[in-house]
Image 1 (cartoon, rainbow, N blue to C red):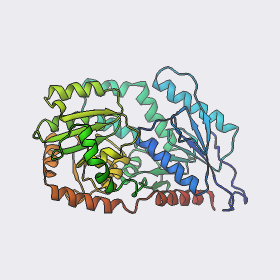
Image 2: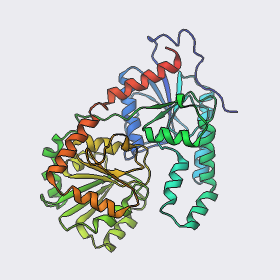
Image 3: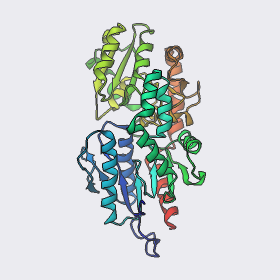
Image 4: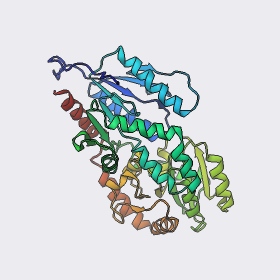
Length: 395
């Protein structure tokens, strides 16, 4: 049976003067992932509010660990099923000998107080993924030990009596959890990610547009579409390349992100005759110059609970094109502050990209998009998280 690792809620624990001790579980951190960037920002905001943080992790890259405790949980493994299973066991071993006010997991680990469903619902992801696969591939996926383990682990976690709450990063994810699992709606809390509106502002266009376009040999009058993300297949790079082949020569695309399929995507771009109209940068730690150089942000994702890159692009003032299975549909009204469509509908994607040939429409949608995300600050996110923590602790 899984154990409850949080401290007993004594009168001392309920005193708001005591700093809240929070254990965060995340198997791996790289500077390039959206979920990881959310976690890094959330941790900084929570630390500014006095929360004491410990991170249980297998691999944490970069300097973001300053100011909080790292607890390594890195047993040897072979294959991704063994990787996830052994990490969960190692976490449980570590937590047995430690006490925290709350244990918040960003992985599917049974026995936590809180789970942030940043990866959405695995069963729904498999359903959406299957739309682009053959019957044989869908059958093999349904028989995969890894996917069967992940769905079962997800069910045990969501339906565990020990789970006090779930942080959903979009209403879409909340609705999916309710449709798949036997869990009370009262446990599900929609808390949107925050974005630094000063760092991601329209001013970066003046600073970076000319310089970066010159560096990448992209003409000033070229309409530049930007994609940012890892997981090219899931996030729609193949259909985006297809759409680019139907646009005129004055349209360019930059694909920013680290992905094992990059060579395959580059070969697809060459087969489509896109030449130097499409550039792949690989993983970039600082994406701000690319937002500043772009005219339109495009993410035709098959499934994405709520990508931080959409918040960043909207905050910069870029019009956004994304899909109906992106959690950003909570914020985007089609035709008003962005454009939406089915991830598999290449013709509609082409039509949406062509709509934004109009520079005045781009500016209008960009302004409305920035206004939409103005309330979603890092401070607002931190405050909502703290309110949830304190309510669970009875403070």
